[in-house]
Length: 531
Image (tube, rainbow, N blue to C red; front, side, top):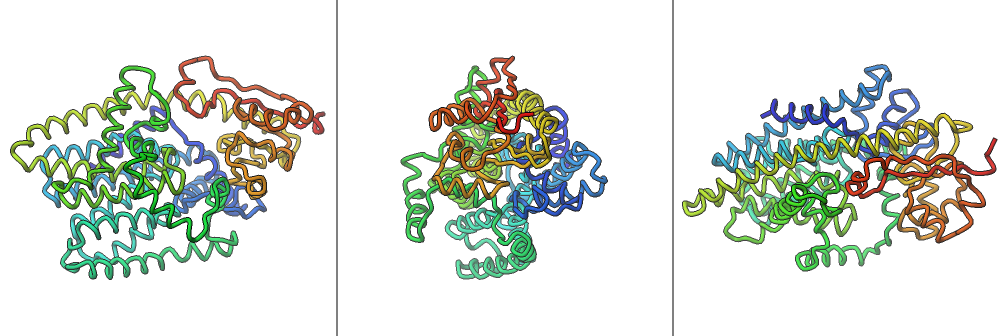
């Protein structure tokens, strides 16, 4: 299982060479650390512009070991690390299948859906931290489902691993713990009651917190806060909660989710290609993909309602339900595929265990075998078609557009300290090397402060930011240009010149496949800085 998953991930990387926007945000800090400039995006500015310690420190180490010669080499080495993590995840899933004595088709469903889930594979090779989330979540489920020895110590490593992977890792760990506490607390020789369950998990959580403590101390001393600035910047766009409003809103989201289905994009996106739930597919095969995977994801979220399904599946499904609500209603990141990818594994395990329940009954065994085979066949075909689309969008939007903008700005900037205002600053920031005034200020606290001051909620409302910060360059999509013109009609005309237009809309079909509309950018240059 290790080898098959590893090979699929590497072949996918070789075919698509997909590199996510956020990889270049994180890697700029990683490379600066390797070069001796500190763990910062801009040398001399101590701002934590990344969220994953593992996803930042490992590339920094790889860059240092290769003498900072090539970001391409670091990316491929990092892909090998992530493919290895996926392979180990596959081993944990196989151990779960054997430990629970899963029948043939539920086992095939578990392993097959995992190794061909487009979000898991793509975001494990494109620079994100998904592979580490898969590793620690699968280890966690193995501990809960198979009942190995040394539970407290292993749980502590899992909890700390989740936190070293993502700052909200404790929410994932907590949601799964609550699911098992509700549906199946007595699953181990040392846990015979809910009281024992709480005691074991409290010990593990405390020990995990101690393992994670060095990172908290370092970031507090180095950045002035253990909370990544990216979280602060994203929160600045939303209405602040009071201590009373927040728990009330959480409770309201949980109880109203079933009726509102506000979280539909997260629920149905777990088996779709990136942003697959955000727009209507344009062809018959893709439309089938959309409908089929919508049903698959939503089913996994609501299986915990079914009393005839085994308690293990219901526990994981409930955790999935809580996490879907968290991403969609609380953090506001439910449509972002790199977050949704973290839930896909839970959905896959839930569906597999549900299939095991149905397979154990004579009347439904044959039907379950047929359904599992059909699901695997369709998922594999969607994986292949999605890979082709991902490759095309990456080449058009990332390589031929945003990367080219970054290189052009590097060549045309007057000084290395020129400032650039824009929203997508990964590729452009990395390849230009300039100071980014990005929205919502992930690398620039001054932008975040202006957003709070002007109560801005969207990147199409940039006019006050331009007025306050007066960047040397502005890189805008059409919708952002329209937003600035609506707020201040003379701003772009009086203060800026159009310096360059980057347009890759040669293939008109590409526009319908990219909801972020990154085919067209206009670069503006401040008039006072003209030669």
